[in-house]
Amino acid sequence: MSEPLTAQRGAAQIFSGLSDDEAELLSQADRFARAELYPLAPHMDNEEWWPDQAFPKLGANGYFGITAPESLGGSGADLFTSGLILQAFARWNHAFALSWVAHENLWLQKLLRNASPEQLARYAPPMCRGESIGALGLTEPGAGSDALGSMRTTAVRDGDDYVLNGTKIYITNGPVADVLLVYAKTDKGLGSQGISAFIVESGFPGFKVAQKLVKMGFRGSQTAELVFDNCRVPAANLIGAENSGVKVVMSGLDLERAMIAPLCLGIAERALELSLDYARTRQQFGKPIASFQMVQDKLAQMYVWVESMRVFTYQALRAASALEGGDAGRGDIHKITAASVMFAANTMNQVLNEAVQIHGGSGYIWESEINRLYRAIKLLEIGAGTTEVRKIIISGEMLRG
Ligand SMILES: Cc1cc2nc3c(=O)[nH]c(=O)nc-3n(C[C@H](O)[C@H](O)[C@H](O)COP(=O)(O)OP(=O)(O)OC[C@H]3O[C@@H](n4cnc5c(N)ncnc54)[C@H](O)[C@@H]3O)c2cc1C
Image 1: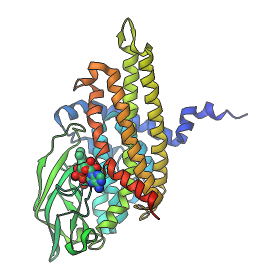
Image 2 (image 1 turned 180 degrees about the horizontal axis):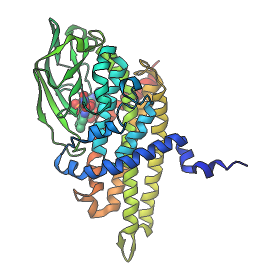
Image 3 (image 1 turned 90 degrees about the vertical axis):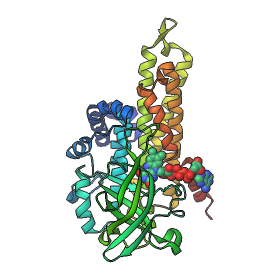
């Protein structure tokens, strides 16, 4: 007689919906992140230090190019697999996980979906090896939530080049990037339809990191203001046709949102784990604080929040994973992915609030791990579209006639 399912896989794994292979992959990535990324986290947070060797090391271990074809040096896996790796990295070093997802998802994913075979052959393999760090430059000082409509950066054709002028701000990996996806207006008269996407190498003349920005959280992930001062970009580095930048933006939008939620899930899981450890060991009134019902209430509530995040995150990620190129940016998936990231970010906020409360004064101290997580989480309600923008998308899709 065969073993009952619960004996083979465990109720928690069945509830999460992960197959045995997926559970094993998550656990492998978790072990790797704990051994390799966790020890870097305090130094990265305290001094905004960037570990130069980490990207190539991850590349050598197959942790870049997850969704890239093997012919380009990738693993040929799907977005869901990529999300599980992100979840594991976020548990042990959320700042590194943010830099990883900016490289892997914000940029490489779009390169794979939109670039020509020549562009792919030149730029994808070094990104898959972790030898070339990627960044996405969309946001500008005057163009955040309205990134496309208010864009001021321009690109003007000059012989075999385009000449870019403008400023991009809050760019993850900006200070350390080797190759960037940059959006610029090629036809001002067409409004948001007059935008094009370019591959810009940091060595191109006229590209400058104007300043590295100091942040309250995710401090090890490097963020910059970038300036393009008559920056010459070969016309061969235009992605797709001129004025087709909106298509490139939209092709990645839902996938990006689906991939923010695992970052939130990993952080929330770690916060719950730290809180359980603390509640078991911290003694007050002669007993562990875990014996007090008000602390148990918090732990139970945190568990429910984390498990709800897990289900929503995985379901949205599977739906986004099934998208073929060009399907994103409208319809149900647009609503679902916006909802998943909104729920994950807001719920993680509640988890972290209770986690710091359980840690008492020690949670308020800068150097504690829970404090490091608490300082970070606000970003997930702002970056890749704010909570308000996510609500606009969800209600807009529901109210569409
Ligand atoms: C650490 C960090 C990393 C980032 N990484 C990148 C990156 O790698 N690449 C990149 O291109 N960008 C990046 N961003 C930029 C990020 O995507 C923007 O900050 C975000 O889209 C919001 O834009 P904004 O900051 O200009 O805020 P604003 O758009 O000015 O919004 C300010 C407030 O107004 C609200 N608001 C705006 N419009 C509306 C509306 N119509 N209705 C209701 N409320 C509204 C917003 O929700 C928000 O509360 C990053 C940002 C940070 C902080």
